[in-house]
Image 1 (cartoon, rainbow, N blue to C red):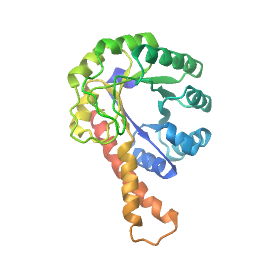
Image 2 (image 1 turned 90 degrees about the vertical axis):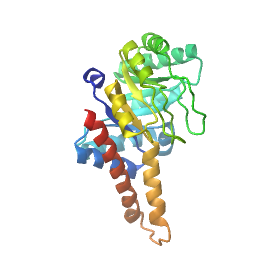
Image 3 (image 1 turned 60 degrees about the vertical axis):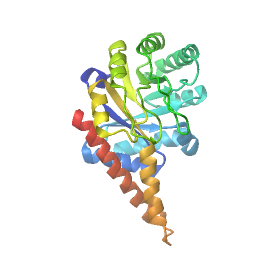
Image 4 (image 1 turned 180 degrees about the vertical axis):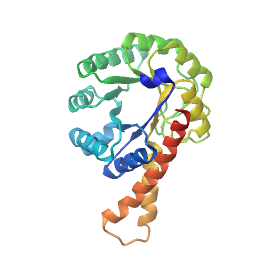
Length: 266
């Protein structure tokens, strides 16, 4: 909410293991940036909720980075509760593929769940295509956004404004006209999902027009894995402690650039 009031934004980046988390924090340390660390359901199933929280908290302290832990795209009420119990700073409930009335009902329930923990709640409204899904032409309507925020009491809203999760087949063109309408209609923070592949100038303009949180995931995975694949090609090295740091460096390079983009507006 502070970002929403001051017209600034935070980069929210997903981590998947120790190596990607270290890369995010090295970049934040290098650029003297605050950061939101995100975990998806898949990551929590892979790492475990408590180990993921313990690792993130310990490393934030070790690297001297101010950061927050966020549960991204939660579809399970049970897992949302587990994340709240484990100490997540914020959680996202994603019922965006359900009818509006059902999305409101589920989101309201999560907002009530989060209140005793003083945790922020993010939700999604409108169709933001996920990996493998066809991108929607119609963005979130401002009147729907206002009703959704008013009735649920969420802290942050992810709206569809021409963005999509995963990589884009064509250069995206964000609907800044719709973003302006939504910004004028709601008081909560606004979130841009699917920033992987969105041109830098559009990211900056989105922040200027009211986006407070920039989500990044796909490019991070891609940078790590592509570097790892290159290193392992025709390589007999079996010591992962020598191989993984090279892929971590690719994450540092990517996230440093992303933070510089966000910071240039801030």
